[in-house]
Length: 574
Image 1 (cartoon, rainbow, N blue to C red):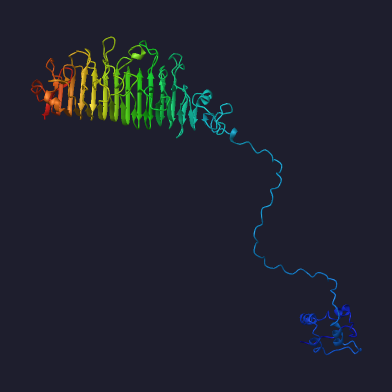
Image 2 (tube, one colour; image 1 turned 180 degrees about the horizontal axis):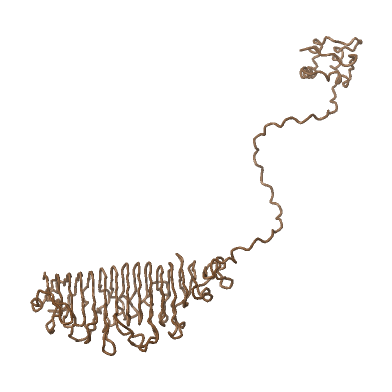
């Protein structure tokens, strides 16, 4: 240890603690060692290194320190606080303590700016939301203040407006307003569970046909109608000469238990107030069903109307696919299968009834020019079950198209169905596949089956004529067809197609009768009582009999005075 420097003043030392503290305040580098030695009262260690002692007797440093052995050190007063040192490096963050108690709720803030309630997307839109809408507070064009029902929005809508349906709505009937578009978003529609009647109609809205209405249905709505025996469920019912265009996802007619109904209508188009004097207009209905039409008695009933409907899926009705009376254009296209014939509650059931005079509008002739009926489908299946069918209407019935004054319009019935299956079912009464009314007027009606595979089970006549006219003013053509005729009980030498009453065209067609039919000698064509050879056969294969008189008719195809082609070429009997 280095030497201790001289003390202040005369180097006198007092044994009291204060003097010692004052005398040692100049010690710098050795202070830690001195403090440790004093704390251990190791006097020898200190005094052995001190060279400058006081000359005053008894006051040497050695003696002073010796006296300290028995002196109790009393801490002095705390000195003044030194300057704050440099801040050290921050330590690691400690563990988060528990959340404190929730404070008292503060006062309510000021009201914010007005939201979308008052913002209109367009004054031509009315939005329907059955869940969140309210007819009493709804605002036309508002994104938020919506209507709860279509009828509520319809009451406010004016010509040119669009009613936008955003949810399924329940129990709405009698809709349809002039100049309005009803647009259904995907997953929406009208589902009637208690109300019975037409979802859309024109009843009481036309001033007895003087002011027919027009409206549109667009989008992807699913429509479900309820039917009772007294009141029918209907998807679209135009009765007073109005017109509509539509697109929907599906149409269903259900009974009150929620099952497929035996009664009801998908589409009805009629001009009730039309007359021969020219009052009123023909109803027009044009539309598309994306998927299926299920349930009901009728798919289409048309009277003094023009109808074009495309169905992407299947049509399954109990009785009638198409009734067309006094129409100018019926064009029905089904992407899948058509099923009918099993109705229990009504005897009027058939695939097609084509009549020049509309019975429902008082049989007033309304056709001007050519009438065309065209039906296209992948498959038609007749299930002969339920009530016994009415005898006057067969599965496909085409009635006389003559006018009241004896003049005649041209009528074309074109059936393009890939497969036709006539099934026996549980009903013993079996009407024929075709029933034709002929007439004494100019050539008027042509029925054409194109590319059809026809399978007819036992018991059904193929063709019946309602009349005895022997003039060839009805053309019936089977082109590129295959007919498998399984009727076993017609009797010996029965005629399948009687050429007395129609001009038959069999082109690229195969006709096969049952084994029993071959045994009984079924005759495919017969002209025994007809002075005209009313037949055109070109590339026909059959196992039935063709009379020698026809086989000897000639090999060349010829035309008579009215331009009808007749004759026989390339026939094979197998």
